[in-house]
Length: 463
Image (cartoon, rainbow, N blue to C red; front, top):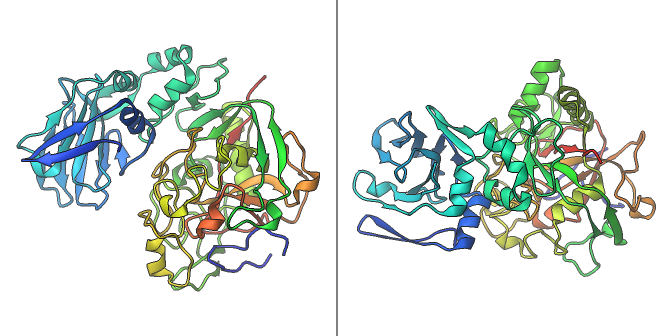
């Protein structure tokens, strides 16, 4: 299949206030409400890692030490100062998006926001917040960082699953390992093994698939709209499969995902099949926590087969209908966060003002999402189901053969079998806003590898 650029990386599938703070005299005065706390637990801001973090501008690092305090240093190693918990060891540290403050949570749920400029002088600490305390109670402080407590993980299943998901839904928090024999309920986060992908149980439900004729940017292949019944809950990958997760698979199996990835190796808009471009080197830098790219449909299926064998559970790709249901998360708007793409840079990684500097002929949004290429998993806000990057970052293979909606199964199944084109959903870091909508559809030869194309896992749950 011929690939071309039209402000996207391949041809479209078509018929032809978290915390309000005032820094005064080196102190931080905080206004905090219950929604603010929930936002802290559910919305990623800045680069976070529970044992350490890097400021967005790369100028500072913060690492939790053996004594439970966070040590802040400049990038050259110069010591800046310490941040301590509210009478308890820290379990999480991150920088605010502007890099001017360090935000920490201690094991008792105490939240602290410390200006970098005030380190060694004064900072403000808040009394433990019940919601944060519950979240922190699932973390075990130990030398070198924090981890989930296995006893707490076993007890979590008796709690309200939706409430638990909100409390735990921070990208720096791994989902608990699911105990054997437990059937997770809707809203629950879990993983099947230490290195398995984090999963979120999406509830059953009915939705309208496709877009209305009035939707801006709509393509004809997004209709006619149809009613789809997702009859049973299913587990969906919380994030797209990362470079590290795919690397574990290749090391375990010897699987070779080849090169000739469709890329722009010189960064000058000369896109094409690039023999030396592959999933380990897609022509731009990636962290191990970025979504893996340059993966074809067969590579994704091979990963699913390996993961199923390792866990004893049935992992697979989402069907196209399941994917749109998960992406919409109960919404009917063009994006799960609304209709205005220029307000979407906190929710999706697509072609934006930053991309326009490198690719001036691209159509972009007016905001800057902070990334030219892929972003680490969890860099943007999750949707109402707790799923990240359903819009943008990398486009995702789904199970379906290419086809229109006229013969699609009403229960959300996939037209499968041998076919010359498979469906791709979600859009990517290189796509204009209209190609990041919930209803947008693409097609590609299942053997194609593209530097903006990856995948997400799903798992069938037992009845």
